[in-house]
Image: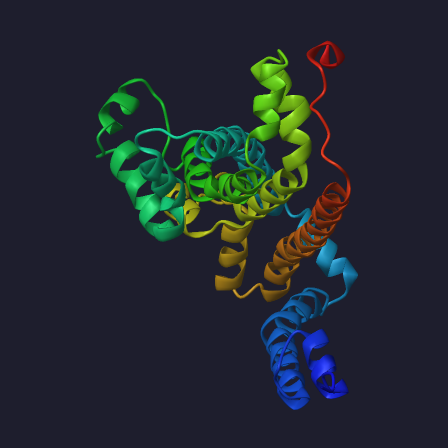
Length: 302
């Protein structure tokens, strides 16, 4: 009996049984889609931002309202990302490592911001903390501002970004199982030692990836923040809101100059994301090639 033909072997090695022209057509369509809907708009942002020269570009970024928007955006991200980091790790640990009543409900709550419009999120906070909301009179009596102030922006940002870290870690932790953690506990390690020396090294690249995505969404959020901010120029405008105001005032160069900061953030996010995925894949391949190791003895963790 003759062996498989060379053509059949090549098809098997390529991972598909389709004709070459089908593969090339799909690749071409994908590249054209990326070029038309991603690369060209991104290039247009920088082109328009620099249309009147680099001096006009810097002048738009040095404007006091732009600096205020940058500062507020950073404040919201600096508060929201660490909070979501703690919540994401705790939620992923509970969902992936334990079986308990209400586990599916907790998983649903983690996914809730993905299914709720950001504008609706903003309206929810206005209903709860607004002047006519549930806690509005009490907050007003104690001179506490949430809506149309920084706390409302931070709350809205936290809500729309909290699934990113948890959703990145849950499947990763579930795939790894809990054998290593159980072995470490049997050897006498504490819960903190188990997490720091056993769990964290296994999830570090997924954790970095989740933090990067969370930070990018926090700094680029528009809908929920727009509702709760009040659009007070120089006080409650984040970068996306400042871009909208400049564009509505026909200051296109300034608007695209500020928007270029968000575009740069997107490029940096994609770069770090690619590096994190590459390192994670490399670590997984290296771990698969090595024989299983015993968890470190608790004495070595001290």
